[in-house]
Length: 98
Image (cartoon, rainbow, N blue to C red; front, side, top):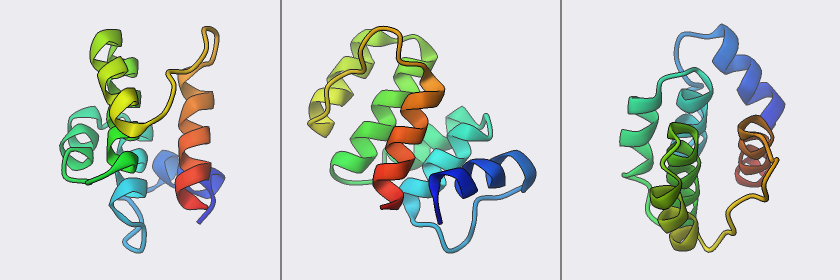
């Protein structure tokens, strides 16, 4: 599944694709506006993928300090000023869908 397919699914389907792993399901939930569910799921994902999604969610929430902590845990730099949440979502999704 591509990032674009995942995004379209989040806009049209009631549930994340069953064949998507937990990281893509968390991204799907985030894209679908289901922040709390995405947050709960990303906390269950060990390693950099879960931390990166966690960082993005806190950035979306506006909690930059908390986001910074999770970017560091993910081993990823915080996005440069001017990088939109949507652009970053696609960057994460493309890398994780790889």
